[in-house]
Image (tube, rainbow, N blue to C red; front, side, top):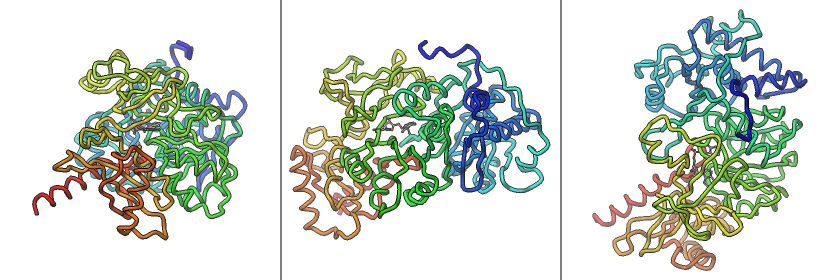
Length: 519
Ligand code: 3UK
């Protein structure tokens, strides 16, 4: 294949040790509030942990290890230690509770976990409940059995496990908007492929770049953007344990990063709070997780001069597979397939639809998709093409335009309406900070378009503003798409990965409709 990786290769060696071999051992690899590690210091830490895991805790190649950490240098070190010893990482988001961790521990048949001591509570519950998990090693506790204490006696070098390029190295659990999380498998070569396709060809980082951002490392958007891409480029990663808009606004002037990875909602929040803060160190801004509305792109460009690079990725594909290079962005569009990937828009029978027509997005490339569960593989992967569940339009120039999650389409009086399009229009109104648009059950129309809106400070959500926003939407969009119902709220339900939880809004809208019908 075009990537030309050798048959046997361990990605931990390629991503960390290679920097030392090539003379960057003294360069900072990871920086946090508490620690600054050069590539050499990081490698030694990884090697010591790999000894602990394999010698003292029986980790064998192919075994799965659960990680539970905030974004931190120690999480990165444990991650690569597992990979270097030939294990498989199952990283979990800090906000997950025991109930969710138990499902993951069972599905992935995990008996060993490494956990930040501050997140012990739900880890202990998981240990008691899962039936599989036997050992938890705590980091940072200061106790005699802490990870750090166990590492102290270990040598600083470790012979990497001679893994095959296509040995599994991580199980990614999809954030799953509904139902149970689903696991997808990724290989050692996938970890390099996302660097050598998306990062190298689209992002094009330099060794002098400094990366920062908000996604958890347990979310593959964060893993790629905050660890793999900087390491493959010999650059530096800043890791923040808390990375909300306020934290980013404090950290950017301090660390002076050049590349930022975050979600559209964070770009909007930062714009609102910017207030003269110096973020002039930024050169490249990447957005993913949900569609980047044209209004957000343009406001950011006006404030900073930077064109945000949107990109759609998925846990199934490990990272971004459609994106636009900085010099060929069409605001509002996701872009074109990343070199190495192919994307199509297909109908219900798997045939291509004509350009300009909405259909189901299908994608194929070097990094997936391989579900752990066979029935999912049969349902969502057709001849290697992963059907992502998104409705897209491709234009005649090959640009891909996001419409909605296929099951989020609103059907009102027989019209198909994409909630994100209505949101994109409402976001251009000066009073609107955030909004979520879903279908609300309606006896006459089947569904009506309902907008939940968070106002910018200084605006009053009264009947006059409802009317103004409705008229505004009618002028911006085909009039049948305007929100017949508008409600002002303090905030919108979002996942830890920055996605609007449309099903939660739909449930609220359905409950309201039900109450009305009942009364
Ligand atoms: C949606 C987008 C429109 C889309 C992810 C970058 O989000 C990531 O992975 P998940 O498995 O979710 C995948 C789904 O999220 N989506 C993501 N990006 C966009 N929709 N425009 C976008 N730019 O519905 C997709 O099917 O949580 C993103 C890198 C790695 C990732 N895992």
